[in-house]
Image 1: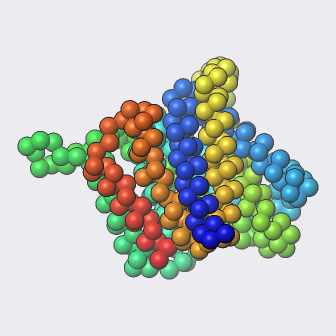
Image 2: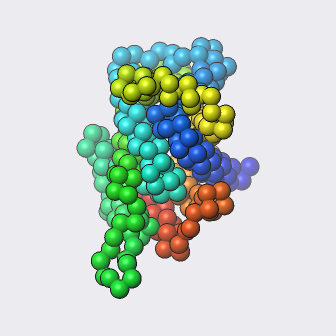
Length: 309
């Protein structure tokens, strides 16, 4: 089928938009940590079933200590730290701005790959960083009437959480790459296309452990908060939606997209979530969206696309 990879990439961007909207509602109803515990449990269930059906065992087969270390570290940085910041940003500044800051994941990944892997930073990548920053700035800064000074129109804590989310995803991605490359070697390629799913499961286990510790050990009345969240029917429905469209459908189709088209094209299309989320945010959450915010989101996506040229 012509343009199959591009079509799948577009579906991924829509899927991640749905994830953000579901997570926005669920985070505000049950709290970001409770949501993440539930989301990790559901993700592990989906991944276990997928691996069981495809490779015959419901766990990451043939993973050695080094594989678990790198993918576990990736899960801690990407899921525990990154997703905590992301879902907290949904509570503080909403999913629309939270997803905008996720465009920082490409610069974060490029910088981390340069530090850890010695990958070359091209002039186009540096330009992409600058354009991405400009796009974000256009969306989150405004100028008061009669004043030349730019001010931040969002809570500082929300902005910091958004930055942390983008950084966490980008750094976690590079750590995943290190772990998956080692996993490919030790497994001898026996897992085939299911190796990324097995890798994701290792990351999700660490994510579940990290969020469980945060909720039940370090949080006051964590058990009561968890039970309250589980009993919230609307919150649970949205948590199920966030888990289904995110770690399960989104990740699965994003891996599939790279099989049918250039990885750079796929990543650029999938990065359009900050643009796609604008209209649903206005329809479902009745948020006011300015022309400058729309332009800023588009410019940020253009900046991301330059990393793959």
